Length: 403
Image (cartoon, rainbow, N blue to C red; front, side, top):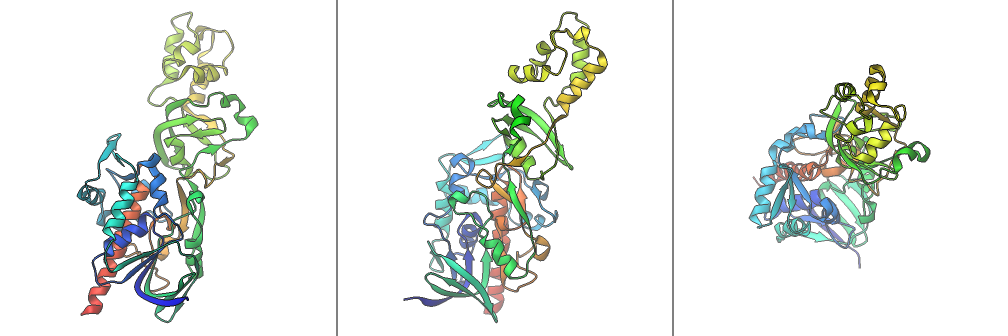
C-alpha cells in the first residue's frame, strides 16, 4: 500500500554530490531521505578514472571550470578544498596515489570512495531508498511533494543532485534539468563534454592509419589553452588534450593544434637544410613518431633534400605543423563523454548556498549545474564542494529554527 512520508530534506540522486550531501547532514537533527533510481549506488563514481576514481586535484580554482558565470564556483571551492576531502579519505584509511603530481586516485578501486560516503551517511537521520521511480515533483505551499512508486514523499527542502546526461549506460538522464525547467529555471543548452572528437570519413582518411599514436600537443580555442597528450584514433582524436578542448568546442569550430610545441620547427628545418643531403623526414623523426612524421612530410615535394626546398616553403610547412588545422564533424556523444557541459543557469542560484533564487527551499548541486570541470578530478571536487556549502546552509537554517 502506498503511503505518504515527510522529511526535512529530500535529496534526489545518490551520486557523488548526493552522497556527499547525505554524509555532511549525517548525525544532525535534520531528517533526510535520499532517493535514487539505481539498484547499485554511485555507478558514475565506480567507472570513473578507469575504475580508480580521480577523486580530486591538488590545485583547484574557478579557472579549472567552464561555465557561463565564471565567478560562481569560487565560493564553494574555497569553502571546501581538495585537502578537506583528502582528510576524509585518509580518515577512512583509503590508499591513494598521486598521478603527474596533481591528480589523486584511489589505489585499490573506486568502490572505496562509494563505501566511504555510504559509511559516513550511515546514521539514524539519513534514509537512502533505492531503486525508486520518481514520477513528478510539485510544491504545495511551503512543502515539496514528490510522487514515487513507493508513495508520496514531502519535504521542506529539496536538493536536486541528479547529475547530467553523460554515461547513459549507468542511468544518466535529463530528469534534474526537467525539474529545473518546471520551477522556472533557465537551462543552458547541454552537450557532451570531456569527449573524443570524430571527423568526416573522407577528410580523416589520410590520418586514420595513425590510430594508436599519442603525442604531446597544445591547443588554443577562444582563449581556452591546454597542453597535454593527444591520441589519434580511427575516427578522429582523443586523449586528455582533446577531451578538455571538447568542452569548449562547438559545431563548426576549426581546431588549430600545435603538434610540436616548445620547438621552433622552422628554425630547426632551415638550419638542417645547410647540412646538404638531409631529408625532411629525418629531422621530423627527432620530434614526432615516425608514422606521423611520414604523413606530414607528404606535404613537401617528394624525394627532395631540405637544401632543395626554399625557405618560404619550409616556413609554411613548419607552420602547418604548429597550426595543424582540422574541422571535427561531431563528438562521440554522451555514451563516451565523461561529463556534460551546460545545465541549470547559475545566475539563478545562490553561490553561497546553492539555493534557487526562484524557489525557496530548492537547491541544485553537482553536475546538474552549468559548471563543468576540466579533466583531472575537478568535477568530483565540484560535487564535494557544492554539496558542502549546500549542507552548511541547511544546518544554519536548522539551528535558527531550533532557537
